[in-house]
Structure formats: C-alpha cells, structure tokens
Length: 340
Image (tube, rainbow, N blue to C red; front, side, top):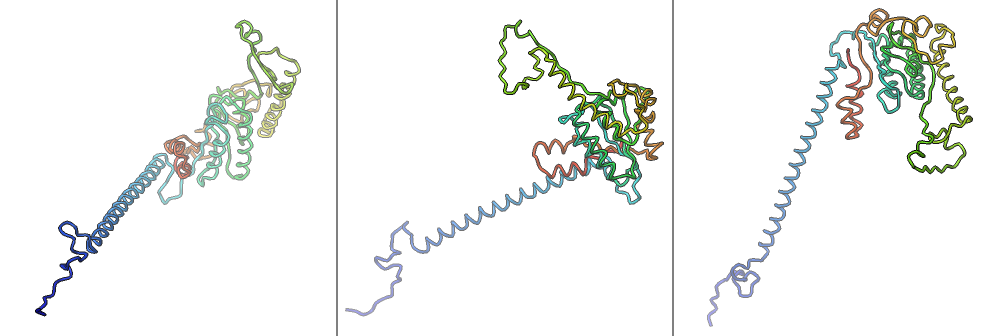
C-alpha cells in the first residue's frame, strides 16, 4: 500500500459541513452575509428616518421664522415699532369703548382695563383718552372698569386721563367716563342716563289661549320670582325695586366720586334722563366740548394718536384655534398699539 497521500482541502472532505451540494451554502460565511444584510437595512432605514426628521425640523423652523416675520411686519405697519435712534415722539394714547358693555362683547372689563394699563405704561404717553361711543350695558362690567381705571390712574399720577364721548356716552358708559380726570363731548353727543332698569314681558293667559299646560316645580317660595307666566306679585316688585335702587346708589356714588364739585346737585341728574353735550356741560356732567383730536392737540400737546385698544386680529384668531400661549404673547407685543 502506498503512503503517498495528497492533502485534500477540508472543504472537500466527505461529510464535511461544507459539502452540501449545489445551492445549499448555509455555512458560517452565509450566516455572516445574512447578518450584514440586516444591519445594512437597519442602518439605511435609520439614515432615512434621520433625513425625514431633519426635513421636518427645517420646515417647522422656517414656519416659525415666517410666523414671527409676519408678526413684525404687521406690527411695523401698525406703527408699533420706531426703529429710529431719536427720542420717541410723545403721543396721546387712545382706548376705545364701543357698543354694549358686557362680559361677552369687545367692550368687556378685562379688555378695556388691559388697554388702559398698556396705554399708561408706554414711555411716550403724554395723556390717555377713553374714547367712548356706547349706550351702556352691564353694571357689573362698568363698575369693574371704573375701579380698574381708578386704580391704574393712581399708579401714574403724572399722566392725565380724559374721557371723550362721541355719539353717545350713557348709562354704564357714563359710569366708566366718571373715572376720568375730565370728560369732553361734542355739543350734540348724548350724555347721562344715570339710572338702572330691569324689564321683561308678561304672558299671563297666553298659554291658556293656545291650549298649552305649563308645569313649573320649584323649591323655595320665591324661586319663580317675577315669572312672566304668572300675575305680578306686589312683594316681588318691591323687592326688585330695592335691588335696582341699591345698584343705582352704587352708580351715583361713582359719579359723585369722579365728578366731584363739578357736578351740579340736582335730582334730575340721577333720574335717568339723557342730555345733549351742551346741556351736560351746563349741569356739570362734562367739562368741555371737543373731540379726541382737540384734546390731544390743545390739552396734551401730543397730536399723534396711538390706539392701545386690544383688537381681534390674525394672531388672535390663530390663538383661538390652536390655543398656544406663544401666540398670546405675540399678540400682546405686536398687535396692540396702532397709530391713527
């Protein structure tokens, strides 16, 4: 027997783990290739995800930048910024009180007080004008504005505060005007109506004619107080009159406090009557005839008008839609003051 043996690679040995036949390569090299493929796929997907995240990041940054740029543009157009290095020109600050005074209208205590506070805090304010065109509204909102205006005014004693009445300054609107140092109006303005009212309708017998049965169940003998489908009860009327009288006294106290010795003590003044501006000047309800322009030019010596009334604008609408506090800050900073 010959001892001449030739070396045969292990890969060709019979029964070797590599001897699997065609298409059966499942050894360590194949396993390493499969792992590499999985790792490559994971890395690729991770890279794609990072790219997507970067794109979204750039998008949102660009959106935020554009948002702020628009805010600055609107503020500049509204005159909120003065980029000159010279001393800012003195201005007369305007706060508008228009329409019905109520919690759910633009003329509510919170908005009016915010405008007044911003007007006084402006470094270039020479004087503040409450520009009023309202027939009144809620005694609660009017009283709150009166108290807040008096409080803010006391913190800025060096800045005068005037009220200027346009077409009408009556009832709750005059309540607010009384908080000012002086009140001006046009000779034809309607001023006064210092009184309180409560009204409604009575439908006694209406349901019977319609064939409708009303069912009312209460706990408390006065819970159906002044029910419009029941006959008027005299004791209820007396009580309601006492409530209105109490509110009326609060109104009169505020007017006396605000007007001081200028007010002519006459019972008719507090009877709920309304007066023209000319008549109001005679009975002490106002101090002079004029407009916000004449007051700014001739009394404050600051003819430039800047409106500090909180307004509903683009950012306000966006804020109500998304509820983001940042937009509230942008609104406060950029959309409040407006040069007229």
